[in-house]
Image (cartoon, rainbow, N blue to C red; front, top):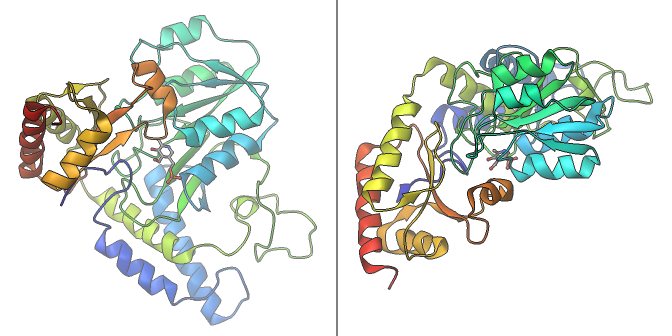
Length: 363
Ligand SMILES: Cc1ncc(COP(=O)(O)O)c(C=O)c1O
């Protein structure tokens, strides 16, 4: 199988991450007791925290069960509660739905028509009272990257904090080029190719967060409320140590590697175009959305899968806002996304398969 759905989850999982998970599965419960078994577990947890912190560059790493939970925590737990939140275009539902649920007024940031934030227009039209900006670092539909570091500077100059969804960029860009953002979220299972069920919220600066979950932490059990300090404040309950250990090992490996993901993005786009497909939107990441003239996206996905053993994904990719902007809300797009293990031969096969499907027009 030619796997081109890395934006959904990164495969193959890193062998060293799998090994770390298996090792950690035999450990105890970190933070529960002071005995030798718990100490070993705590050491593993804290080593993973350090490795992830090194990837993030700064901030306190709080472990979660994934990007969705981390984003809910940041958005719904932000204090003081923002009355107006500036939102970037192209947001994933993991960001947009908690924003809607928060009840805050949402200010859609001006953009260039393709979804890239227009910083000059943001500065010129800044809505008074906006205290939080929420942005996706990389779009999971088009691969477009937002100018996050510049946006953070602009927002901070107006006393607004910035939360960044790094689900599509963590592990690709080292270090993450997000400037002095106030909170970052990502999952372990995408670009880092660790395991599902683990993720992080990295809290930087002096962000104040009300925990969404309340429970035991192994610290200060007599207190009636969650501890005031991070990361314990946001880590109620028994952590997923195998997933966290895998994440830590993957973060360390990712830092030590170089992957020409920009080159991969160009090669992927070229293969899709060679296949006669029309690219919808364009970005920097190796994620390309496209349509084959005369072939519905779902049918294209099915034909690539059944007839060519090529795995891509059709539909809205949990990002209806992106499709509304791109004019593809009705049927979505076909999305191909490459990973660091994707070879040129696989892209060649994709191009040829698309040509074949286009020739037969989905008959
Ligand atoms: C841009 C973006 N944000 C957030 C998420 C949510 O990640 P998870 O499902 O791992 O919680 C995804 C997953 O597809 C994503 O692509």
